[in-house]
Length: 136
Image (cartoon, rainbow, N blue to C red):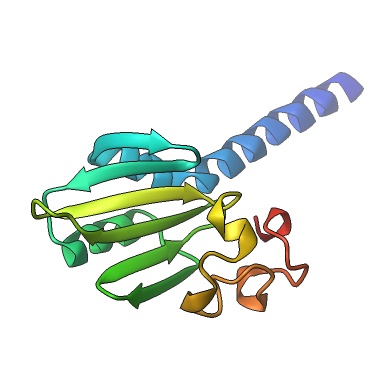
């Protein structure tokens, strides 16, 4: 009987870990699977969409709802648990999408101008410590 309980407990733990892993990167995975990868620089991946900003953002949000969303200067910013996604107009038409790990510029307050949900340590981000590591 104890062996059966261990097997069931192990199975349940495995399922829980798979669910957690699947939830953490839906936006990043959707973008990587849907749009043309244009390059990587440090913690930032850049993609291209032939669609305008509004259409591109709507499709990303439909695939994975962000924790916070803000528009500024023709760009849309989507904050996820582990990433900031920025969508802006591409010079050749369409949209440029950047996916940045929160350990990058965000850790020093690079998105403070966007308000609650984008500042390190903001209550909307789910923590008050001021550091990026606990915002995940």
